[in-house]
Structure formats: C-alpha cells, structure tokens
Image 1: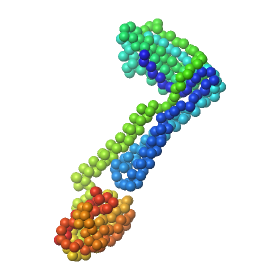
Image 2: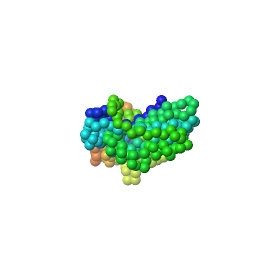
Image 3: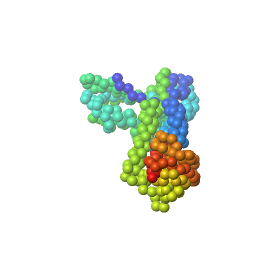
Image 4: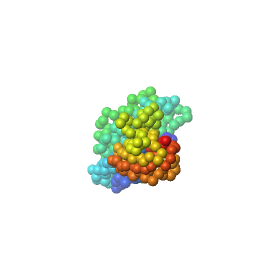
Length: 351
C-alpha cells in the first residue's frame, strides 16, 4: 500500500490542541551560523581570495535560506495555534474522505504528471491557504490485476473550514471528476466525518532532506563560482592580463643607479623582475596600493635567507617605505611578499 501525507498541522482527539513539533530549520540555522563564522574568519585572513569570497557569499545565502525557512515554520505554527484558539482548542477535528478506483492499467498514468494522483498530490498548495486546513493524506492500494483503490483524506480544524472548502470550485472531488479516463465510473464516494480520536502526530517542516539539498546546493554553487573566477584569473594572467611582466611606464625597475621602485597590489607586484649592480647600494621605494598589507623581502633564493642586511622590508597596510641594502655579489636572486609568497614573487638580477 502506497501512502503519502503532506502535514500542515498537528491534530488530535477531543481536548488536544496543536502540538509543538521539531523542525529541521533549527538545526540548519545553527550549522549555517557556524559556516558563516568560518567563512568570515577565512575571508578576514585573505580578502582577495576568490575562493574565500565565494565561500562567504554561499554561507550568507545559506544563512538567509535557513532563517527564511525557520520564519515560515514559526508562522505556520502560530497559524495553527490561532486556528485552535478560534475553535476553542478542545473541539473535534473534521475530515473529508474521497475514495475511488483507478482503472486497470491506469495506475502509472495516474501517478505521472497530469494524472489524477499527481493532481491530488499537488493540490495542497491551494489548500494550505484555507483557514483551518491541517493535513492532506493520499493512500493507494495497488492491484496486480483489476482496479486499484485510492483514498484521499483532508483534515480540518473546524467544521466551518471544511464547509468553506466545499464551496470552492477546486475541491478534491472536482479534481477526481476531471480524470474520467483513469477513474472507474461509479466508484467515487465522499464522506464528511468527525475525528473522534487520532493519536498521529504530524509536523510542518521543510523536510531535512530537501532543506539539506538546498544548503549543499548553495555551498557547492559558491565553490563553483570561486573555482570559475580563479580559473578565469589564471587564464587572464597567462594571456597577459594578470601580473604584468612589462613594468608600467614611468616605473624605475633598474636599481643599478641606486634608486628604483616596486608597487604592490592585491595580490601581485607590478613587475616580476628587478636589476641591480654588485656592491652598489640599493634604495628601493616600495609602495603598497592594495587593500591589504604587503611587503617586499629580498632573499638568496626561494625559501632562502636574507640577501643582505636591510633587504627585509617592513610590512605596511598602505603607503610607501624605503628598503635599503647592498647586493653582496652578482647573481640571480629572489624577492617576495612574506604574506603572499606564492602569488607575489620575482627575480632580482645583479650584474
């Protein structure tokens, strides 16, 4: 026997009002808050990282979705409480049951889009807006041979809600009658009944599976955006649109005469080569035009030691600083930003 239920409120017997119910949004809200905190810490450490910024954007979107889902669940819970208060809280519930037989060989068509069971299953969106509506339940007893039996039940907080529903032009009976090719003629029956006792506990919440799917989808989407931006940045750099190898006009890259200039942005130097003369003092003007802190550090090689005394420039958040040292000998040396060594690096050639 197949059974499907779309629960939109808790209902019980005499003297039983709406019950509080667990909701997946409370758990997801806590997880997304933790996710947002991690993203903020990551972004704070490196604001220029495409991956970090995408992660932050995805976590913010997830937090908004979780908060919205929680708000919808709470609003629905208040509506159920209001319905219970309007009916005195101790009144019995009411239900309408529609039974019918699905013709032999028509069960798959009835379940497919446009079929009678599909139409009934998607009618809850319209029912949800009616005052007093609590639950839609569809039960099917498939038969290997012959007609299959179907039962559709709606539950209401008060008789008035059921009565107002029966006056609409879109009742479950109307939907069934629109599928005469799938429903066996003469088998449709409708019963309006009072629920004397019902110990089922139903709950209104966005299913954990669906909610988790949304959350994971947003996170993965943010990661994909970050990966795409990073790939685009790499391609752009390879094509000459990234860190410029040719120094900008007016920038002195030759330190042989004693003075030269190096500009830092986020996260690249404006040039990846500098030249100097052995034994001749270098007075380099290092300028940070980025939004985060940078420095320049001249080394004997990547991962090596200071090239000379004073070759380790101060880390500055902005502005300029002088880096003064004397290259000890001719050769090919290395310079980097100590805060972004894999992105900001270059070659210092001494002749």
